[in-house]
Length: 379
Image (cartoon, rainbow, N blue to C red; front, side, top):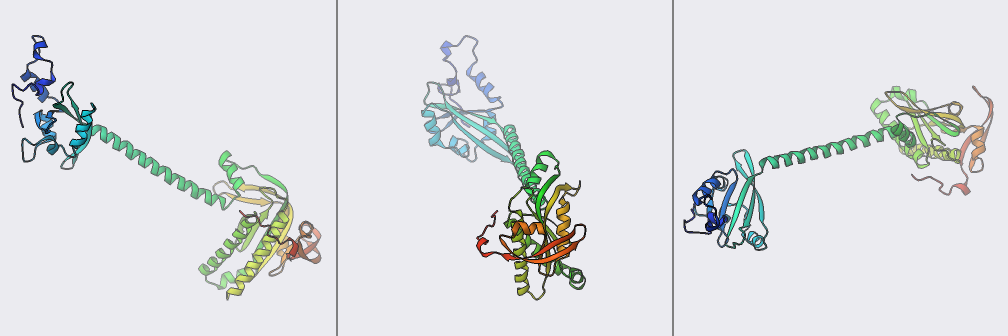
């Protein structure tokens, strides 16, 4: 550590006013040096020509101790110090700032350096060092809290998206939006909707004779394909019940083509099952029933939400499915009237339908050539 010569007016005493201008009781150079040595901040005076330290107090020596050479210049004692940048800043009458992390064992100390020239003196500069560890810890803590908050927000959004996907699997989007906005869903009556019900022939025997995991895996694949077909035409899958599958067209958003849309869904489902049977050793044969009529749609349940539909249209579709044949599509007279111009239909004659009396029923065979110009509603 180098001391300032007593006759060197550019030393620490140079930072004070000229002694000739001081009042008689002004601090002596020795008293001022003692005062600086006792400060809790680090203070040093450096020569700008070679960065030689001409004065330093105890705190500066503690935070920036010399290694081998006690007279080492500032650029050797201050890690990361950039002499050229510091000199450039000082020449522009601007201070040079730097932060430094020092370690003593597992304990870190953050220091802030501020180097500035004396007013009217181009030969020396004053260097202050302050301990900003508490400030840095607060910043790190705030940053850590911010990162945790952002991570929690992302996780919350992922969970929200997952819940939304799950709920959209059991209810139409418009119903989900109403439930999300208002916490409840108002039951709605739809005067005209077309319902399709499907089940598989001899499924009970299949459930007994086949390995459960394999059977459910196949059923899941089939129902997943049905879901894609239903979505393709803007219809809604309502639910599955064992081997039964229910879908509806015309709700919750009304559609003038609901009967035709459901007829196309039924034909494509049957075509899918046919093609699947041709490619597999185990076959699945389905019965399909379609009916048009009034229904009520609503959320059912409190802890386990299910969107379901009720009413004459649903009951009639169940009767159509029960009276259908393997790999045939049976539809009611009202559905027939809505689709007869666009689809190929076979008259089944008049049948007594439980709960509805005598009704004329029809088989849906296919779509007429002139109307099969891809009226699919792409989602």
